[in-house]
Amino acid sequence: PARSRHARPPLPELPEVETTRRGIEPHLVDRRVTGVVIRQRSLRWPVPQALDRALPGQTIRSVRRRGKYLLLDTDAGTAILHLGMSGSLRIVPRAQPAGKHDHVDIQLDSGQSLRLTDPRRFGALLWTTGDAEQHELLAELGPEPLSNDFDGAHLFESSRGRKVAVKHFIMDSHIVVGVGNIYANEALFMAGIHPTRPAGRISRERYDALAQAIKQVLAASIKMGGTTLRDFVGGDGKPGYFKQTLRVYDRV
Image (cartoon, rainbow, N blue to C red; front, side, top):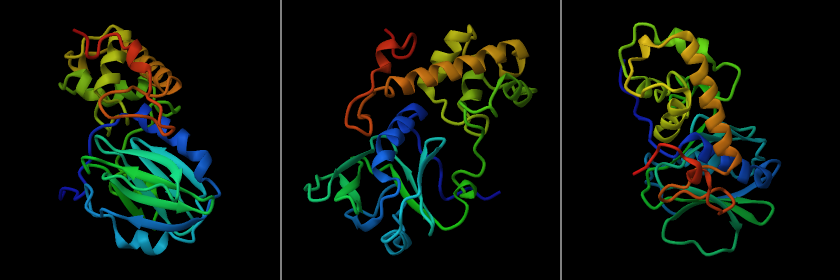
């Protein structure tokens, strides 16, 4: 098949995105969008002009996360956001002056704005009028790791005949979404599985333990506000603190 024009970007990992979602959700749901200010359209992909036309006047019905993507649902369509490697979202007063890297404001009837800041411009803001779950960036994603659809049986069945290292296997978003480098290392350590062991040579029992470890590590990180690495801070502007508890990632 032809390669998608929307190749999936890296970082941040799932807990950072979920932390951001929880931070901005109370300020967005049931709020009407009064305007959209695009200061820089050239992000990872150009911000579509359809968003400028369709979003103003719409009420945000929900703020969801799918993998590492944030979805702002309205009756007219869904805005799809990705934070790239250094992006962040803030709720700011509408009149607050924009900084050099503040590329987009979604203005709300509360007098506040949702501001996208992205120094490296690897983030994305897209628009779809169809089922967001079927957008080319989302349609082939694996199950959410904290859902009931993800368990040891899923990992075991998906891994049969696979020679790839188990670390890379669980980092594949077609297998399970949101398990990036940091959390893969932590979960494998917790489950007592060597990261380079071939995925197809791991037993069902070990995959049960690994699935549980992934759930525990991600849930703990979300509870503590995400992992602060490089540029990430949460939706409330405060850094996450899970890095203080990491056992194996970035250890000397």
